[in-house]
Image (cartoon, rainbow, N blue to C red; front, side, top):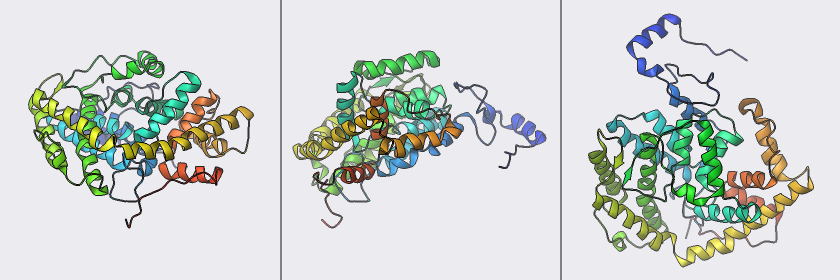
Length: 392
């Protein structure tokens, strides 16, 4: 294998003099002697690229957001969502003078631990995991596990903290970063999240960059989910949304919320919105829940088609692990897959934890289509997932 080449000493000195910001490095890492900033790869660019090249990043492509029962290439997948969050957050962060690379890293990694089938999948996996262990599954906590536990990627504490604290279901009118702490305190916080759902609801990012990503997560899905609802025919028009303070159309909502956040946050040690904009954002979310996410028909589909897959696959693979079945897919397609990458990520001994955790890791890592195909392969007589056709 060819050795990595480096910049010449003379050019490196010139860059240090003319562009010292490229070598600035306040990133806190578990292995502090590795992954130092370089001109072509500043500190948080390393995090961005680690996430982009991680084994699970490509799986965003087939993880749906809200509308899991439609064959339609124009409906949002999680891959687009994380890019939209990154774009919106960087637009805000640039004006506020924040670190855009850190923003990008948090945004691109924030959902990497998400289940297939959106929040319905998260809900069912949490129910199974909690019933067996008394612990909770939440996608933001699992995203940290993917990047820091399943794959030991030496991601910075600042990026991991932003990912852990991104919870886009809980909006605040003002975000004030808490002290970032160290890895010992962070590990304790992560463990507490597994034990208490209340802990997750109280999380606040430790950086302004993390705060910007958190509010951008909401901005990115609020209007886009409405677009998708119109696309699928779930909604006939957007007139049903009452509060137009921030607009009803996606592009208008993004612009107006971004402008208001910048107006209230420029030069400040916090991220803030005007009260009437915050009220409109909160009402917009409530309207989405009532008119889109909370529809009886959608809930019935989830209960009848998605929940049985999670329940049956969870029990099936848990039994395989407890029985030591060497031919199980959870060993051949999951544990061996991660161990094989141990030469890059130090995960050669993966699989020695509680079998419930390994099952959770496997199910959460799946894309929608992988889970459907696996379920049909293992249980050919089970009812099939019913999709709305491309040619409806």
